[in-house]
Image (tube, rainbow, N blue to C red; front, side, top):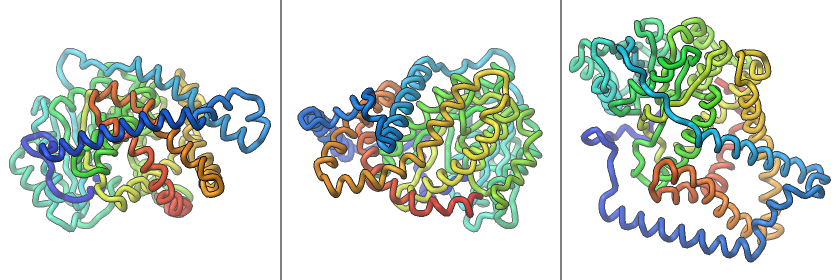
Length: 452
């Protein structure tokens, strides 16, 4: 359901497209150039003292100055949390699928103006390695103005015993579309898949494994990867960003049953965790405004506050379309920021209570450190920019230090994916700082009045 950058069909013979030989050669040259640049940056960083600032975290004088102390204390807290999460991430293992008969499953695919991509999403589910007599697929056309219904209806004709279609006469929003499917679905478990996403054959079995293993788990997040990975430079960067941000974070959160967001691209829910809260979720308001975005993070909050655990299943993979333009990327980040702002406020209402019996401390620490990221970021960002103007040497120190630190962080990607695309993660760090922060800051102040 998430807006796709274009409705072009990238899926070929069930696999995402790959680079041709010419592009692979250029890609290799770029990677070698960046690695060489990093080596030079490391030498420069040591020579001009770019890394000396980290020693200040352990000096009393740093904390004696209020503003500098705030920044240093937050950075130190973030690094401690990063270390804890690294240990948890390293220990994480996907849940094995238990033996025995598989449960009845309802897969929900809402769509709006998705065009031919929705057919690919449906076929990936219909062709999944799951017993047909235990599978139900509900597809909802949320009042699309393009040819989405044509492709949805064509898929239904191909799999009439598997697929049920619902068509809204006008656009009512993703929550209404999902509500219709949740209330009509007969499965013991629900799986939601975005209409711009395709799953791998084993995904349906894998996504429900944690729910079958532990009755305390109410929701499971899938492993979201980039479908149009090779389309352009930006999508290559987002491929690495998804691994670093989503796999690392959700794997560590899963170790204490506190995954904060089960994504719309792929998630699974226990029926007993859905039905008691479905109406509240459908009619959720924030500051008097009906909420129309961030339905996945909101649903996760409703599941967590009931006392359920939430988990991450790395082996349940989905490939989703990501924006291919700067404008599209800014819109996606703004939408995420608005919903995170709202749902962090909602989460604050229960995260400090006895909403469940165990494993409450680490979710609180994670919430506090990540919740302070926004005010800290925009408190110091103008000061940092001003220092660049007044003392240009600081820009060089910052530039080299960022490259070296990002290289260390990309070791998570290297361990997980084992390829040289980690280079794009390094490039993304510069892109995010110099181009993404400003584009997200200006409209963010309007999130309170448009929190839906």
